[in-house]
Image (cartoon, rainbow, N blue to C red):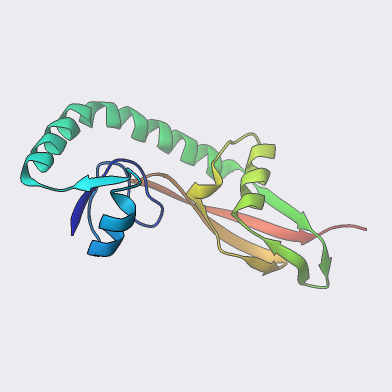
Length: 147
């Protein structure tokens, strides 16, 4: 079943993407929630016209995302967490990385950060998706809290 997304859907696509999903997922979740519409031929023509008009606006958004990506590469993130040896009491997730970025002066929504769950101290890398064309690898380090 082909659908046109009306808004960003995590792990599926961005607004105005044409995606192929299983019929039950589209019919029972995406369409009733207002996340998508059926990709009929007329809907695809309207989408193509809208995308053509938005193309020059998109260039500015991509430029802003690339500037933010350069700023993120300069940020050094160290997250302190309670640990016994190398093993953490708890874990470090996207929420903690977003909070560390906010403390460094860069506001990034946690849903755009992909890092997984980390349960040991050390150096890791998170993926930050600023735009569908701009994805940044963000290195960070987890250190044990001083008592």
